[in-house]
Length: 94
Image 1: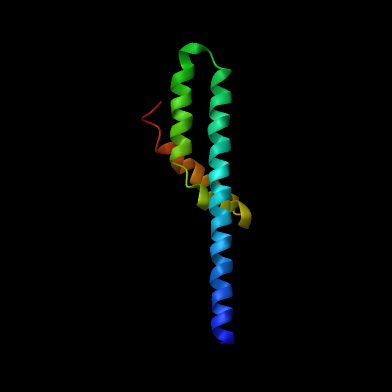
Image 2: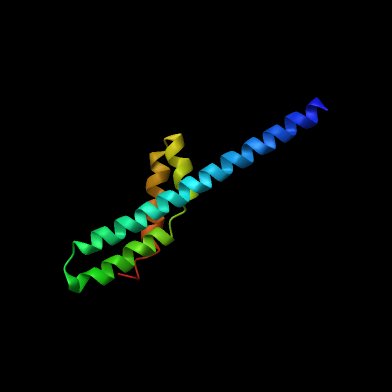
């Protein structure tokens, strides 16, 4: 009984932690989408749409769950790798 309760508690804890990480990842993604819009507003009209499209492409191709995990563990090399991969996947959009 104690083992079952411990297992259930562990699974529930991991589920809550996973859900919190997913929420944090989604929140970060939404913040970056808003940043794309704000940055685009400061650009000349003729380059605004292209820059906004590229920025949103990078956001859509970023693995935010992996990014949050890398930031929490302090692995800045992994953070840079994730951002670089997302940016490279959008090179054709520019």
